[in-house]
Image (cartoon, rainbow, N blue to C red; front, side):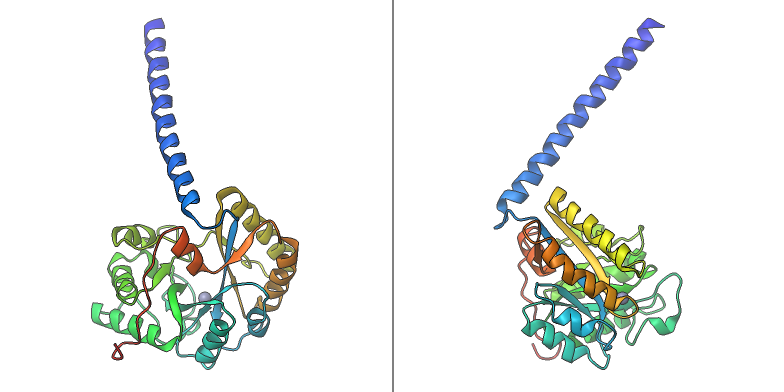
Length: 278
Ligand SMILES: [Zn+2]
């Protein structure tokens, strides 16, 4: 009996030593990444989804006194106007690509959406057209898409087109089975994803709580990526972001997602001109 116990203790000690070695390796890597960055500030990237349809909160978001990332849906009435306005204010612009969800009404998807019944060629063509439609886009993220982001065939094409055009892809992480992160790594693209949804409940109290969580995560882990929305929650979201700018001043730096992608993941692609304009 004693012998068996001793064997078990030795096994546990072995596993502990192994884990300590792995942990030390990860910490060393983390330190290296942090020291490479040009800033030792704690950085928070706020992405605002669903821009491009003149929805509630759009003007307030575009007037924010800090750098945000505006995710603009293609082919909508204010797509071009909002993308240009955001770019002129020094904000980052990304394409908010509509993608089929597991649940939800098709009419919420918007025009030019990626659905699971499309051929490879159709997926490629829709992604290219969407990029062409959003001026100044340096990246892309998904609108809805809980079904598509777990589809390897489709996401592989989406990422290929993004890479060809010099765009990164931000996984909104609407599905925990998403294949985007592993695909991005395999294609030498930055595996950047959303950490926290700001306005999954539409109340100032909840959004404030999520902002505090985000700031704390940025302080603990050096960076944090969050997603908020215009539309239904737009007025509350923009109001809380505005007050947070002052509340969190000195604790976190508000940066564009492009700044993180360049400085943390060392991604330096240059977005290319629209298809057919190369
Ligand atoms: Zn969306």
